[in-house]
Image (cartoon, rainbow, N blue to C red; front, side, top):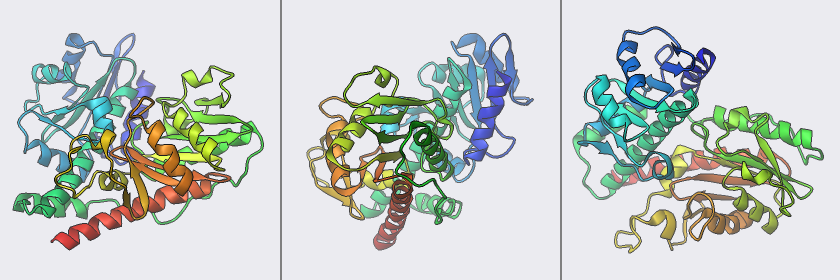
Length: 387
C-alpha cells in the first residue's frame, strides 16, 4: 500500500496538479500507511474510523488551479456545480468544506468523493485503492478549470463581468502552462501484428498524458487490425496501458468487450464507416471549453446541450456533437461516428476530443494537439474581441 501511496503522490506532481512534496496520501491495508509524515495526518486518520474508505488523497493544487478553486469556492455557499461530462458522470457537484476538521470533512465526504477546503486544498477518498482518490482529485481540478474559463467568457459576452473576476482571470492566465508546439516521435504504421499494435498504443497513450491532453484515467485509444479492434480497457490509465488493452473482434465472436472502454461501439462504427485504423480520445481543456460555448440565448434545449443540441456547430472547422458516454438513444455512439468518418476529428459537447489516423497514431496525435492549440487561441481571440 505504501508503494501505491507514493505512486499517486508522484503522479499528482508530474501531471502538474500539485507542487512537489505537497500531496498527502494514506492507504489502509493491514495497517494505515502514509506517503510522508505531516501534522495534518492526525486529523485525516480520524476519517478512516467514520467513513467506509481505504484510501485518502489530499493536496493543495498547483497554480493556476489553487487560485481557480479558491475563487470559485468564494462565490458559492455549499457546492460548485460544473456542467462538463466528467462532473455529470462522476462528481455531480463539488462540496465546499470551510472547516479543517475531521467532523466537517466527514459530513461532506459522506455525500461526495471529493471536497474543496478553501485555502487548504482538495480532499478525496476511495474504497479500493489510492487511484480512486487521485481520479476524483484530478477530475475536480479539470471541472473547475473548465467552469472558470467558460463562465468568464459568458460573463464577458453578456457584459456582466465584475472587476474581481477580471483580476483573478489575469492572474490565472499568467500562470497557465505554455502550449506544446512540437510533436513526439512515434512508431510508423500500418501495423501488421498484435505485439506492434499493443506497443504503439502504449506509446501513444503515454504521450497523450504527458502532453496534458487528458486528466486522470479518462480518454481512450484503439487500433483496428484484421477485423479486431484493440482498445484500452474501461478505467485504464493511458500512460500505463501494458496489459490493459482488449482485443475485440468486430463480429462479436468474443466476450473481451465486457472490460473494454465504454466507447467501444463508437470506435467500431467509425471503423465501419471509414478507412481509419486508429482513434485517440482525450479531454483537452480548451477543446472542452469551446465545445460548451454557444451564443444562442433563446435555445429551447439550453441546459440539455450535451444530449439535445440540434445546431450544426463547429469550432475552427471541427464539428461539435452532443452525446452521452456509452450507448443508448442519446449516446455518443450515435452522434460521433458520422462526424469522425467525414472529417477525421470531432468534439463531443462538454466531454472531449476524438481524432483518427489512417495508418498509425502520428496523424491522430498531431490533430489532437493542433485542435487543442487552435481552441486555446480561439478562446483568447474571443476574449479580446469582447473586451
